[in-house]
Image (cartoon, rainbow, N blue to C red; front, side, top):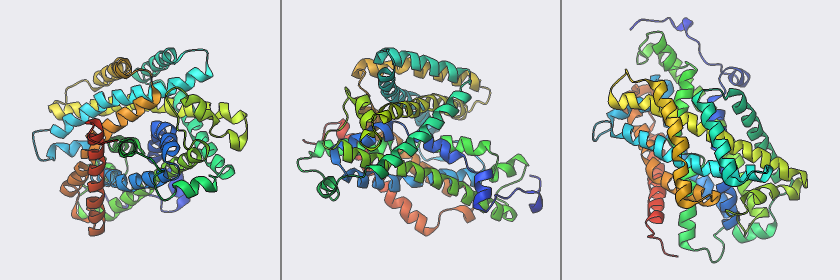
Length: 446
């Protein structure tokens, strides 16, 4: 390893102005892909069923799942790599976590693509003369073609703009149409009377699986963060060993910057989620959206605040948010798989671009399977795949902690307070997974 003088290193900007100018970015990519099925379908569904009590459900989920991403960021900036590269260190059969990750990014992400895609098509069908299945076929074909040939940057930026507008509309809608005192009094401190255990467990597990998004996206954040060539990654690029104590202050500064960036995106996602829940509690409770009326319900959710024009604005922006998620799912899952397979097979000669394109095409064709089995039912598909997701993604959180403890220099490993938080919240994440398993196996009575 070579040496680099400290004055040659680019330390992160410490001021807020400098931070937003130079370093802000990966968290908002993450936040914008998270504002999809969870915010637009699950939040209105839980708000419609449980009223204001759904706020406490989502708060618990967000607090419990934060650590999985924080550990991923700590690893990326402290080691200079993606956490997935260290999953081969996990105890058990050789590379089992990498193969499980490949399964999640191919099979489960195909199911997510189908679920979010059908919801997107439901909104497109309300905006165009096409039917739901016709809309799905057209939108999916366009998305697959764009991602295969990587020619979607302009479209993606437009969709993200509309997603940001959606967030503003939801916040303004909450300001101008706060929930009624009756709804608050009835649902703020407990579940509505008559709520069955099966309904609560099923919807809670679904929310825990999809909100704000799955922990597998810690791998995607790692890729985006490394692309910026900051922290330990910059040292490795220069041929410097990041474990050298002389560079610890530099790496610590970048870990703080990466965490600051993610905290902003996480907070933004949470605010939009809670705002949508409260809006739904005010407008929909006790009548949540269904497969048949999803588009109409979403369009009308701001009508009391802004009038008839908001119906079309809401549909257009919600469509953009969902469609951007479909594109990101296809792109992110295919790139993650093309990165993981060579590691799992220990073969650097594999054609990663060919793998990426094959996964995109396979996901597009494969997404027709859950629709054929379950039907073109947007709400049902989202609930189904999100419950499965909470079960299979449970390992990412402890896996990220394991690789942090084993690969980061001592100075960057979690403090005792962080470790206590990890233990408590990992237990909660496993409880969420058990709830999902109980729902899938039909072990929860009505």
